Length: 350
Ligand code: 5AD
Image (cartoon, rainbow, N blue to C red; front, side):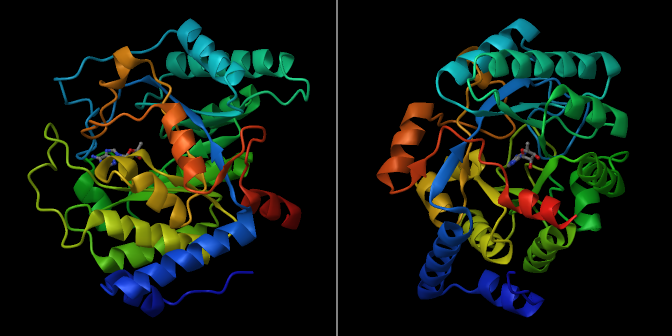
C-alpha cells in the first residue's frame, strides 16, 4: 500500500527549484517503478487512424474548426493491415487513436476492425492471446463502449485534461462538459476496461494548486493508467496566444510523472509523445521519472503530418526508440501485453 500524500508535500515538491531535490525525486521514482512494476518498458504501437473530429477543443490542432489540415481516415483494410504488420513485426499491444466521432456508423466500423484485428492476431498466435488493444477515441455512450469492449478492446484512454472545472471550461467550448468526461470514465470502469486518464501540463491559467488536485484526482479515481504531457501551443487554435504558465512545462511534467509513480506505484504511466517532442532527452528522462510505457507511432507517413494535435516536428522511428530505451538501461518486453498491475490488484479485491 502506497503512503498517502498530503497537498502540502506535493506542493512543496512541485514548487521547488532545488536541483538536488529533483535528482532525489527521480531516483526514488525509478526505484519505485522497478520494485512495483519491474524494469520492463512495454510498447504500444500507435495507429492514428483518423484525424476527423467533431469537437472544437481550444488547444488541439485537429479541432473541427481548423480548416488548414487535410482530413484523413484510413480504410478498415489499411488499419487491419497496419495492425497485422505491427503484430508480425513484434508488437503485442496497439493503441488505436482518432479524433472524436460518436456517430453510430463510425463506431460500428471501429467495432468491426477491432473484431477482425483480434481474430486474425489470435489465429496467428500460438498462445491464442493475439494483440492487446487500447482505444483512445473520446467520449462515447455506455453502449458504444460496451460494444467496443465486446469486440475485444480492453484498455481505454480518456484524459480529463485538467481536474479543475473552471479551467476545463476555459479550454473547451460550450457543450463540452467536465461531468460528461467523468461519466465516461465511470462507464469505462463499470464495463471492465483498464482505464487511463491524464492531463496537459502548462495550460494557460493552470496553477500549481491545480496540478496538486490533478494528482489527488488520479488517486481518488483509482485509475489504472496515466498519460501526462506538456501542453504545446498550436498556432491554429484559440488558445495559442494565451500566455502559458510560469513554470518550465518539461520539468513540471517530469515532476508530476515522478510523483504519480510514487503515489500510485503499480499503475502504467506512458512517456508521452509530447514530452519527447519538447525535449530531445524526453524519452530517457520520462522513463527515469517513472514512466513504463512507450507508444511508437506506426501511422503511415502520408498521414502522420496531419495528425497534428500540436506542432510535431521530430518524428522518431520506432526502432530508434527501442534502441534508445535499451541503451538507457531498460528492458523492452515485446512478448507480454504489459497490462496495468493496478488493474489486476483491483480485480483481485473485488
Ligand atoms: N499540446 C499537448 N497535448 C495536446 N493534446 C491535444 N492538444 C494538445 C496540445 N496542443 C493531447 C490531449 C488529448 C491527447 C490525445 O492529446 O491531452 O487528450
